[in-house]
Image (cartoon, one colour):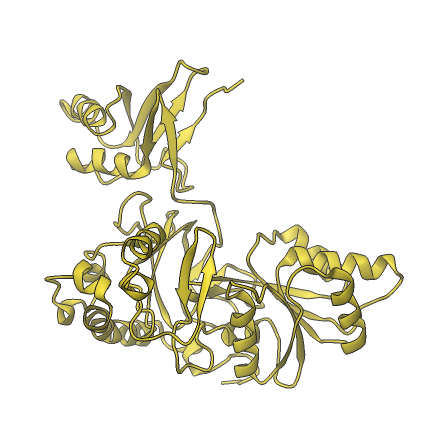
Length: 413
């Protein structure tokens, strides 16, 4: 294997070998969470960790949501981080909410596993990267710096703001790479151009934290910067990263990713859009089935770049969908409950239309017609949401594959 192509041999493993290794590590991680994290001791009470050796078994475990972390931290201040951390973290960061997150592994040189994404973006040992993420309160700057250090590259902690000072540092230090938000990179390139100063030595970038559509990637390329994206969170570290193939995002080697139907924990078929759920193998912060709230889908096959792990289509929206109808909130999870009461497993979409103060609900369900099914669905919809609505059965594949469970089509003017 060409070391310059892949970060390590793990990226080119046979998919079956990788899956076997992940499933072999899973029972120990579940047992570790049960034994070391007070929150998971309660959440996974009665679970036989030794039996969690497959994705089907994993799918039976409850989801952990960001809202659960925040609620636990607020309610259980005597337990550090609400009881979800295992052991004593080296550092703790803050996200809006506020929500506090530990550095995942106290002994890890690259605790968020970012070096793999930096390498895929073409950043190499001995190079200098300008880091355009915040170093204050939030972990993004520290995440990139740890990855660069592990990779053998140097970093300049530019942070956010102070654009003129950052631009001066770029001109003085001439870094080969950038790691930060795409918006800041664009601002820096534009300001350099306004002053008639080229940043010709800046050739590579790993961007994250914001959308970076193909048009913006092309804009960077026109200015000599080859930009790649990664999908990472403060809770989980690296989830997936872009490669030279630019066909989706390759899943990191240190996580198990599921795509589930929004509002439920049930995995969807490959290719169907759903919520990204991640289980980490991090000992310091052993999140089990952490629901990110992001929508994506698994791309079939393997990447043309030669990496053999799963690929995600990228960020396709938010899964935590809700709408207010006649003064009542309706959530995606309620649609899932309606279907479950009637033993339906296909796609469904609750369409809300009408003008202001004249809301109408129509639940469209992919299902074969059966005697009394519409009536049962209507009754379940009324019982679960406390609202009346119409039910329409449609053929399989009729609803768009976009992960949308609640569609608000009302005219609000």
